[in-house]
Length: 126
Image 1 (tube, rainbow, N blue to C red):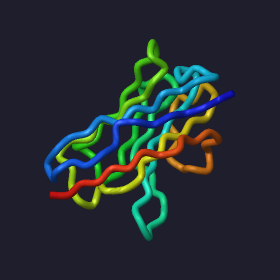
Image 2: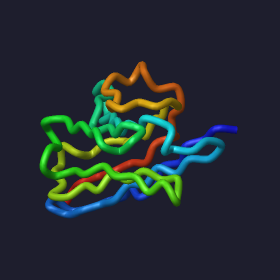
Image 3: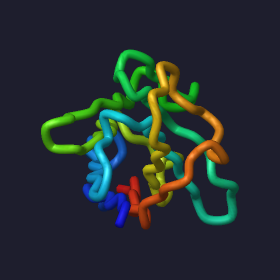
């Protein structure tokens, strides 16, 4: 059974950091494009970052560029989202998503993904 499990969310003060993890089972992430999305209360889900199957291509939304970094550890079958200099507007439930295949370019649109995790909440507050 293909499954994605996010972890690493929590409560952090503005300016702090968190590292989210997305662990896969049932398939290998090095043959998949991975995306991170987030949804704040009352707002639509939005794309935050993504990484191609080769790991060479990444994308960041303008709102997180320079603060967030996506990476993958194929040995652990896990993708990470390092979030630094967190702001209150980063508060949301964060989801990772995957689609199997050899995607040189990462996929920005959420409708390209067919596997989703359950989400991990991030709250940035003093």
